[in-house]
Image 1 (spheres, rainbow, N blue to C red):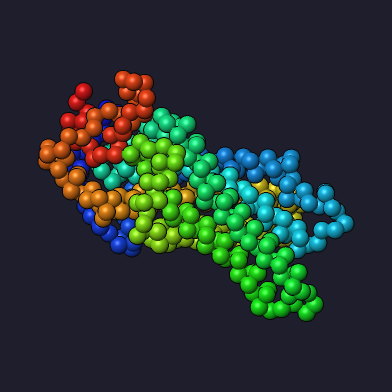
Image 2: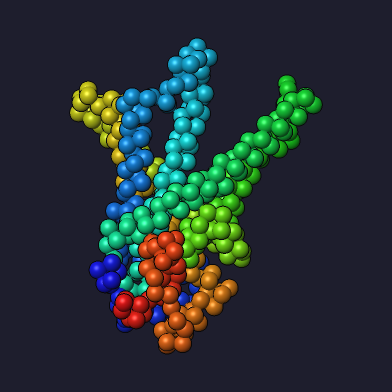
Length: 358
């Protein structure tokens, strides 16, 4: 079993198994990220490459950014075209979220091995995720619906209903009522807050599925209960990673704009057109996502274990197992049991030498 995830007995009881502040967790997350940088980036590059392939095909053949121009060429204004491009980009964020959820177990496996002092490889992490791919596929779909589509549908329904009611009451006519406009626009950040709350409530669903062998609705319920008291920390962690991604993406787009200007205006490279610029921007965004997105998976893993320590005394359970006072499970994750079903996962426990002695 050492080839899959070699045990380091000297680092089994890692100091990570204690209650930590959010600052300590984020600091620890970046420390783990730096130590296993290329492993995390390699796994993170897979969903980023898939979304890059989709968007590149869109730029080359489908042209959804300009679809609204084709449908109504005489009615679309510049602001309308910008709004449509935002909708398209936001739609791709849903696809990226779904793909990232599929690769999340592999990132959790890398983090787990680093926390508990075991060696691993990208192949071993991907095999760990592939062992229960149906479970993770279903869970990724549930999370997409529960954390993005459902909150957006509720927010849009409230926005549309409020707008219709205000229009019936002539509150947004000429001149428009300022309070009515404020109330209408306030529903946009309210919808975003609802989405963040849903993400925080269900953030531990994939860790629960990976480390506790739960599936589907059971993983969602487990996350709902376990995240109580920790949801604000999850939101801050998500916003921290997202802001990093947004800032780097904006900086890359700004730098690319100047490079294109220099090549076209100063260097007289006439081949630098809109298509080449769009492709270059997509490649830059994919590289940034590959480097940044794994940080959130690390933070979620640390928050998950921190919450188990706080609410369930997981650190005491670990100490008892290391002292031989508790019997750990011995069946490897993803291996069918005698009944042909999915076996309990040894990843829900802390490893000890006896585990790998069949």
